[in-house]
Amino acid sequence: MSDPNLEGEDFRRARRGRNIAIAVGLAVFVILVYVVTIVNMGSDVLHRPL
Image (cartoon, rainbow, N blue to C red; front, side, top):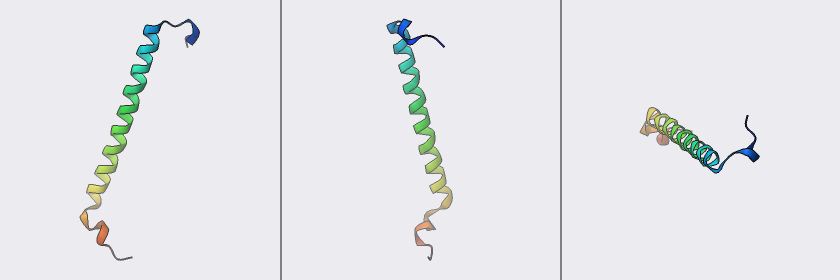
């Protein structure tokens, strides 16, 4: 790994951009899995007897 103290501003900006892209991608994936799970369970999931 490179030493963060010796990096230029361009490298820091690029790393931050990649980190944000990964975070957004992960959030989209989690939301997609949640939505697909709810859709597969169907609308009767709220009307099941206890």
